[in-house]
Image 1 (cartoon, rainbow, N blue to C red):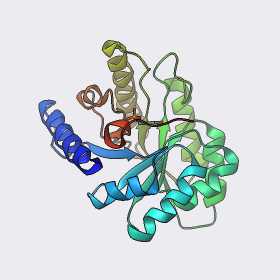
Image 2 (cartoon, protein in one colour):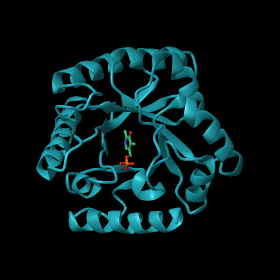
Image 3 (cartoon, protein in one colour):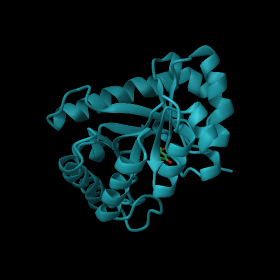
Length: 232
Ligand SMILES: *Cc1c(COP(=O)(O)O)cnc(C)c1O
């Protein structure tokens, strides 16, 4: 089932990209495996899906150590709010933090990596809707964070931006959130030439078509791959 869903969604993503005048491989699929088991992740990985996202470090750590005994190349991004005291653990198991939502978190990541050779890929999370809670709230705050990272966090490699659209059925409101992120990214690229900033992580199970139309390069899909979550 999981393998069929992945095949179908990948095909669908490629078609949506082509319809938007983009290359068929211009949008990557991330499988969001929160609240699903290591065996569900392995089923996806055996079907060729190697990029995963998790919200909670405590949940992801044991799950991915199990997954990697069979599939060592499984890639994990942290996409949920990350507490300062979980940074070291998070970095031990993940390849990227997409939910960089405050300067103090950048500083903590830098502190953990300082003195070493490892650089961490990060995305700046931006709050593009009124009622969503996480992320930098406006463009000035994003620029301020990028200035700070450029000056003080040499072990962070900023790849681009991430957002969650508001939870609503109003597709116009969803589209506005994605447009907002795309135009912010466009201006940030002109201003900060030290990073490519070419990744736009936006789009989930219910809104990824809109996100691709608005320039998403990475969609984060949970329910449409693994089924409904049973949140406790
Ligand atoms: C849960 C989650 C997703 C996936 O949502 P679905 O609706 O299951 O596709 C994507 N991004 C973030 C940040 C999430 O927390």
